[in-house]
Length: 413
Image (cartoon, rainbow, N blue to C red; front, side, top):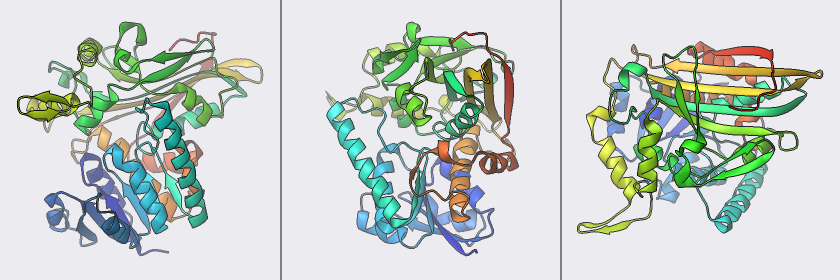
């Protein structure tokens, strides 16, 4: 085996980590890095690796994208979220496996008719991928991604799961959280804005609770956790659909309480609650004297254009992935917590977010190439073999901890 050609779509923040990692694999003979930015032209010299071949590519030019895809053995897709499904469909047409950090199904879509059409489209894509004998590994970054792999491992410790609280978060170290929003950006700023206006569903004491998009940061929907690894408690907010989450894990018949959460330093929620309810996070354009602009796009440019919301070279971010699962094994109440905490590597400069998104993307592609991931069709991270994946993370300095104790019956996060 060997001589593989990898196509990486996108060379943003996470793409830099993915490229660095995939080039460590000596069986990869070529990495085509496709992006619309001119930055890619200097890549071969910049990273001193002749295997890197820059490709100027516009994802809206589907014919050109398809032709480039056909020249590769696997695709690493690190584009903005709206391109995830189109890229996967093109990969299926090309007959090439693809790894994406994004959801194929738009989690922010609130129109039920559009949601139904999306589900039907993804179902057809799954059948096409199976018929072509390829793998579409979706949601394979940090959250979603590593969190799903950890969660699947934790669930297997039980005969019956009753409670599942999952956390996926990236934020500055405490001493770097000094700006007005106590946050600095390590991924797409517009992506952050959109994740802050997303409806959520949680399960509490057997009942499903709907959280409207603009109520995500309401105090009633917030809780705190205090972890020994941090000097301050964290604010936590529901940020996902726990009903679908329970179905992915096969828990929809037994689960009593479940939630997916992001975490931030205290005070964050109060700011974004006002922003959300004041319309600043809406994607619906409004007319201004200078023309139309979407509020979320304006906010992304406002925050993204200021140095105070970026990391300096000596500041670190933190990535937290935590699965807190409770239930019964052999009739005994049990609680299992699997957790990863990673920090920026100041030596390489790679942030924790780059490491926990870019590295899994590269690992996923390599596991497809060498057959450790052999399932065809659309593959969710819960189906990825735990031990080989975790071993690869540990080689890169990302390790998990495990804690098991008797469950006292509490279902709260």
